[in-house]
Length: 400
Image (cartoon, rainbow, N blue to C red; front, side, top):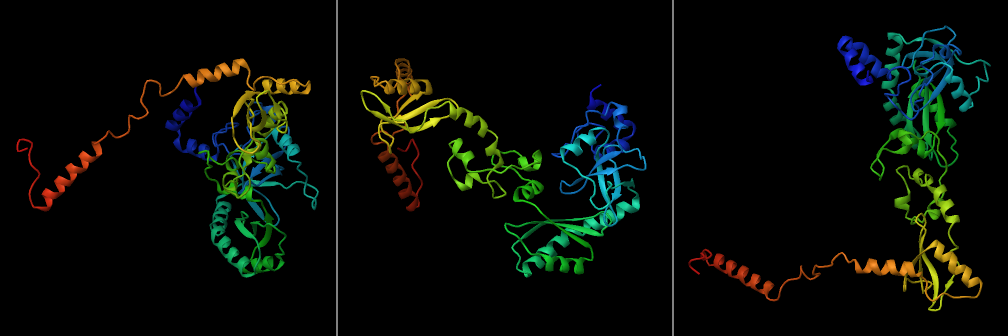
């Protein structure tokens, strides 16, 4: 039976339970509530693989994840809200992965046990109503705390931007996420935060790309930002990626909403680099009996190269394939010059393109005004305006 039909059938029987399951993130390994941090549990159909480890993956706000020991042997499933160990107190998070696959994720993320205790933190229990009340009260203070923290940082003259504040589930700790281009001495700021908000303060620096990923938005391509939809690791982007792809160095077009170079510039750069290796050097001058041709532009992926007889200006442009360019280079090395730049087949194709004119059979002057047409229209409009000024009405056709 189709998953959607089954879900609708269950909704008729127990709508409250189905709604709760949907809010928790779907069933088992299903990625109904897909996020960029979601990991599909492809081992959820194997009960024996779910019991091989006691570690579970728990996700918090701002793409923060942790791995905790289920020492109490609680029957945890994906989407359960749990209270976990924190320093100090406890935190509230959502279980996003269980079973054997957790160990693979721990190895992938280079997870290490807590250096102070030497053992992983534990899962206390499934969150109670009292835990959720404290959690909601703590989350309600995040917006006002962030505004007040920005004001305090500005009053101290610190060159930093506080992007977000995350309170721990019990309200005893707050993480301040900030962006700074240079090193910032925020020792006095931490003292002021601790005195004003009466919580343990942790400052965590993030980059501009991470902030754009948390805020989200729509890019110039019309789709959701990659950093907020699926990207979890950010690789540095350099201007050489634009040079390899022949993209104009326009800062307004190359920069994303975070103010940095767009991440999508790295997507196809390897393909362009590989295609560039199969093209002749742009410094080579092609010699023919007619003239010398200099490189003007290149269509990298199609392998079409345009040459000009002037080194700095587009004069007598000729477009040839890369194979023809390599052939002429070999002839020039042997001291030979072909009669023309384009081959006979390319010249024939060019003539056929010119003959197949888009305006064939149509006059390009069809939109021009006929002689005397404009003057007659002006005379008619002037006659109507004179009649209106005299208080009369325009004459009828039979009166003419």
